[in-house]
Length: 254
Length: 303
Image 1 (cartoon, chains in turn brown, red):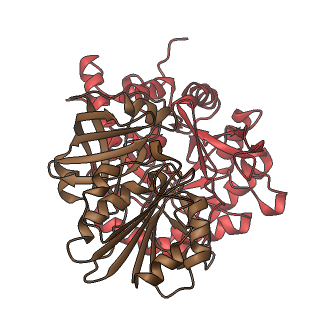
Image 2: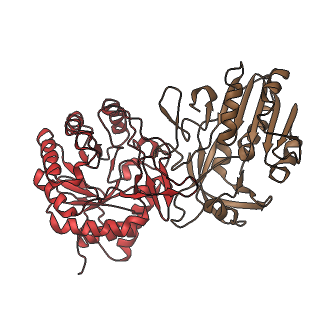
Image 3: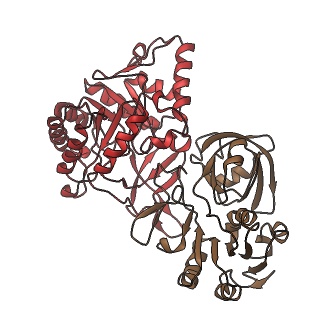
């Protein structure tokens, strides 16, 4: 973990709401593992005050890539960074995904939840069979589609809310069927809270091992401010930044 | 060479920069960022006798140049913290300050007694802003008599220097500071966070379940300076200034206003290595302005 002064190499608007930023980061790119995230200072001033958390989409030393949705003031500022701008990044942060070999892994991504999933597909596809279920609002919200199609996937299950591409419905619609038909061993999911809630009801009690990558309102990113608390089944709080962002689905109180 | 040391009377700190409670974890988290030896002192996260889970989320809300928090002092309890303190003491000789909390006066005393016995602990900071369950949620900091009584009781059971940390959410902070001094405080630190509120237009609900939350960050700096000025005029014991400090220049402004040392808080969350930068900035300004020691400017505000 390090506070690294980095340089923006490229900041590309992918569509109306999403940007892809390539950053030169010697330390973080070399030390990050799938599932890790970074805290980015989006302004040199005090406003906004806090860093913003982002999952690392891809890491190829000396570069990392962040893929983000412009949702507020912080991400708007970040989308305005230009090539060669300095940027302060804290990372790599959080736990990482466990290692698996010779497993059938189903990745489940809703909306921008595709980002951390994208990173892990790369890692896992070498020694495992990867299945990806990905849902977005509509075709224009479907991110990284070209990249996804070029990945080493056993099967891709695509959903949009309006049916503009893939099947009409939610990413959770046929999830039980997908798991059973393909003898899935492990699921790894990332998405909005509503997706998790539906998903948990559908798959919590089936035989797969289920992991989730969680988002939370975060202050520091390294465990000192206790802002990003999530409640666990036994009533304790865990911190998304240091105990997570990867949790076993069964440990969290949904 | 400039002299950065800060003399609190009962202890001389190598520089005036102390990291504030609740923003510095249990110190060891910061080892990745800098050598803990560089600090004047550090205050560990506030501690109650028993483990506390903290408040239901959301626990923070960002405001213009500020941060509202309602974390609720989660912690492992005093016994567990004792083990952590022993571990930290092996890492650094920088003075360790324990921020003592309590739901009742009895709990404050019990916690103070536990850490009074530890040689690894240099000072106690009494957090009199904890809601008191026997006083209908009112904290000792809001009442002169309660402040006097609590400080006096703690002072009787400890031989360690006692800092009393004041809340800014009072009508007359000077009278509270005087009560703490009369009760036996060796030092006053201020300010804790200002109570504020945030609302959510979509849900038409307050952001925080507790309705109010504590505001910190650069937004509160002028408010803090004013209260520090008032307290410096009222007491004879040293004052540690706290509130929105983000730079070496901020630190020197607090010293000029009369603070003997400062605590830096919210900046630790944003920039974990801030202490290094701030200490360097103090030194640079002193060299540039030909200030040889902090005493030269301490309380020398020209009115």
